[in-house]
Structures are given as structure tokens and as C-alpha cells.
Image (cartoon, rainbow, N blue to C red; front, top):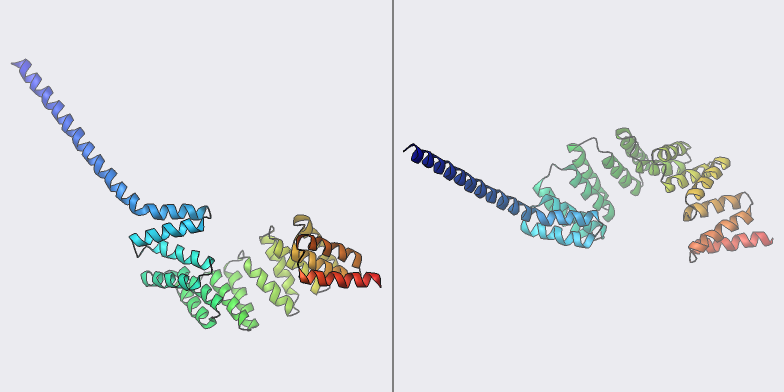
Length: 293
């Protein structure tokens, strides 16, 4: 009898374990099914982002569109498609996606800023100011917003407000280096030598940017600081031997110093990599004429 009771208990325990395993297995299947559904929903977006990381724009676009077909309010897909179409210079399509993004979330400052960027491209500068101001009401610490405002002011010819906006951008973020291009250029063109300092700051922040280094050399050149200018050009051409504008501007400087033989060497080097450059061809003729004389 005791043995029967023992067997009964053992059978009961085994049954309980078996039931527990069945429950666990069933729950496991439910979890797997749930994850599978989530992955299926997220998969086009994930695949699109992977393609985007690999710079495969067309494939990324296809999967972002697939994600949008599954969920027409997919905020990430809308914004990425807007960016892709903007890069393809399909501005109208980009604008449509951004308008829908704003309807979904009007509190995203970056969306307003992207619309402002499109309006810069379209030359609708009043709309640029309107959208930038919307972005700044959401987040006033956006250097890119002040930068965009400065670009719009520059294009409408208001240099004073452009410079003011650019300066505000670097007050917000000293390392926002695109501003240094603009301030260096505008101030140099106004015969204000502080343009040199802005270019220098830009080069310190972004030492690998050869265009900034070339711009600094050009700015020194405009203010007659020949030794500093030549030093920058030499550094530039060591780091980037075929820098087109650097070669041309340095040749111009050498011509101004009446060193036409050196200028001709620089122009010939430029024409070797850009044989159809009309400006360089014409300049070469001038240099050859001077050397003959």
C-alpha cells in the first residue's frame, strides 16, 4: 500500500513536471511568435537602415517605402525618405514627406530645420526664416538654425544680419566649424582682417579640412600677408598636392610677386589633372606671354 502511494506521488510529480514543460514550451512559442511579429514589422526599417549605412541609397529607399506601406505614420521612414529624395535633388518629394512628418510630430525642431533647408534651395527665404524660427522656439540651442538663418540673410544681401547670425551660431557651439567658412569669407570681402582669425579658428577645430586651410591662405593673401599666405599654400599642397583652387590661387600669388616661372609650374600641374579648365588655360597664356616679354 505504501509502495502504491509512493508510485502515485511519483506519477503525480512527473505529470506536474510534464505539464510545467508543456506550459513553458507553450509560453516559449508565444514569446517567439510575438518577437517574430515585431521583427517582421521592424524588418524593412532595419534592412533600410543597414543599406543606408552601406551608402546603398536605392535599396534603402525601397525598404523605407516598404516600411511606410506597412505603417503610413512611420516617422523614421518618412524622414529618411525625405533625406534620400533631397540628396537626389527631388525636392518636391522630399518636401511632401517632411510635411507629413510635421503633421505627425510638430515638436521636432529638426524637421522644421530640414524644411528651412529645402526653402534655401528653392530661394524662398521668407519661408526659411519662418521655419527656422519654429525650430528655435522648440530648441534655441541649435547652431545649425542660426547658421541657416545666416545663409538666407547672405543670399538676400543683408550681410550685417548674416554675420550676426553666424556669430550667434558659434556662441551656441564654438566647434560648429561650417560657420568659420562663412564668417571668414564675408569679413575678408568686407576688408575686415578679423576674417583671418575666424579662418584660423576653423583650421584649429578642423585641421584636416583642406578647403579651410586654402581659405586661410587666400585671406592672408587679400591682406598682403604674403609670408603667412605662402606658408599656408605650402602646407596645403604638401597635404593635398592636387588641390585645384589651392594650386590656382597660389599661382595667382606667384604671378603677383612677378614669379611667373613658378606660377606656370603650378598652373601646368593643375592642368595635368584638370586639362579642360578654361580659367587655367587662359591664365597659362597670360603667364607665357609675360615670360616671353
